[in-house]
Length: 328
Image (cartoon, rainbow, N blue to C red; front, side, top):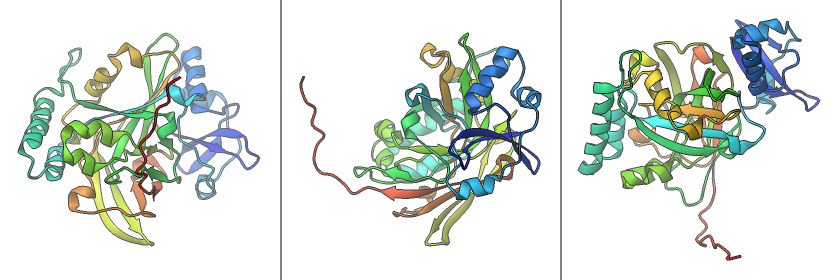
């Protein structure tokens, strides 16, 4: 089952469920977060909650996407309570991609390889045991979450604006503080790779950019092998295209280990909060020498995740004026 959120032509919000080629509205559901909390209250899974509500009217998701009515598949009414975070150097090809970004910077490359080796050696612990910590980063809150089809805005001070095709885990924190995974979605973990390449200690700066995920959320387990395609489209022409791999068969860490090292912090187990956690990638157009331009279109697709994720690039002009802080 795949779930999505959309705005109906009359302006009201709704949740749609897709099974096979059939897409229907979920009766009585206006957000996937509330749907999940209702499922928890009833003591049943998300699919069972959807099925218990019966079938609503059919809906055309493609038309909704084209008309700009598809929303993120999971959000929060207060954007400050949606957390965008991620882990890097988690995929078997990610060290090579990182090294390509850091050519000529031996110290940075060495630290990256050390982190990658930790994952290879200890990222898949036996059940009930804690494995090696992954690289972890913060991207922002719900204010940085961009709907499918909308523009990813690169600030004027950015040195680069590049895509990162990934799978993201989507979570709600239950009222008793338990993290609960609702499903997975395609994601573009948009980043500034030139800033990161300049000094690996600038990784935190490079990640403070918008990101998008969806349009649909796959409910249930993540396939062990995920293979999709990432494209950069300019003026209607594909200027770069490459497959990307994900799923545990292509990762140095298990999902359980990555989830533990995020949710082990009590800060991230606040009841009712929403988390979107990006699991990393090994595929970057930047690593192939591509420089993006204003108006470029990023497209990430994988048949296992429904509709493709498309976002255009909007680059702001640089503002040389420092941000002034007023004293009160």
